[in-house]
Every structure is written in C-alpha cells, then in structure tokens.
Length: 190
Ligand code: SF4
Ligand code: SF4
Image (cartoon, rainbow, N blue to C red; front, top):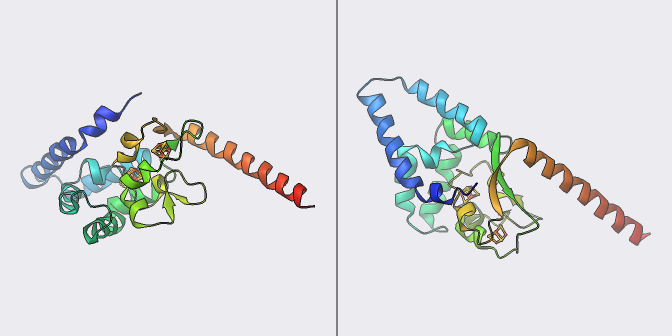
C-alpha cells in the first residue's frame, strides 16, 4: 500500500488532532489521563506515532526546528521526543516491539543515503542509520517519532511499514544470514 499521500498530509492531520485534543481537554473537560492512556496504547500498535501525528506540542517543536536537521533546535526536538511526556516514554519503548514498524527491503535498497539525510536522528547521531548494517536502526530508536519522512523520501520505495510477523521474519532471516557469514569467515580463517 502506498502511504506517501498520507505522509504528505501529516502536519494537517496533526493540527486537526491537536486542536481536537485541546477542545476535548479545555472545553469538554476530558481528563488528561484518558489522552495519556490512549496515546500509550497507540504506542503498542504503531510506536511513538502520537508525537508527530497528534500532539500539539510536537507540532510546535517541529515548527521551531524548521528544515534544519542538525542545529540546536533539532537537538531540542530530539530530546523532547525522547523525554517529553509519558506518552513519549511508552511509545519510545515500543518502537522496537510495536505491532507495525519501519522495515527496509534490502533487495531494492541502493544505499543512496537519502533516508538518513531526511531523518533528524541519523543526522544528529552517527551511531544511527536507516540503511547502514553496522549501525543502530533509526526507525527502532527510542526517539523515533514516526514522522515517516524516511519512508516518503526513499526513491526506490525500499522503506515501508510492516506488521510484526514480517518484521520478525525478516529479522530471523537476517540473523541466519549473519550466522552463515560468520561461519564462512571462521572457515576461511582456519
Ligand atoms: S533512501 Fe531508500 S534506497 Fe536510499 S539508502 Fe535509504 S532505504 Fe536505501
Ligand atoms: S520515522 Fe523515519 S525519519 Fe522519522 S524519526 Fe523515525 S526513523 Fe527518523
């Protein structure tokens, strides 16, 4: 499924959700606790998606950052999405285990690096990457706020959202491949 049109409307969706949340809390006096519980449950399904698709504060942080992925504002947003509120904590914890997450197709990826330039995590921290095998995966990082700009930036459509069984299956295939490679290296070294 092509989700790029949806990703291009993310900020509009965030404004609508943010304003609705503001109305629910300030006008209809809905307890903030329900928002926290709802946002946290969403983290189990999609990871830290609340921060960049629904949160009014997340929208303001992004406005402050502008297009700069490496400056002081980007660092502030990085810290905010790490520690901002309990929804960010729960969502961040589940980024690695959420039902749906970011997956890369190794067969079609050309290692062009565009995705890393788009992502503020990879831009700020060289230990993270969306495509480099020897780095931590940005999409599973605690601070990944599921903006999905990496997915929409890939010219080959190599990044997509996959459900956990396929993500796991891929992980196990990768593990087996790595073990085979290690065994081959050991045999060659003997
Ligand atoms: S943008 Fe796509 S093709 Fe380029 S490195 Fe990232 S995943 Fe691979
Ligand atoms: S969704 Fe992609 S671009 Fe956005 S923060 Fe996560 S890894 Fe980076």
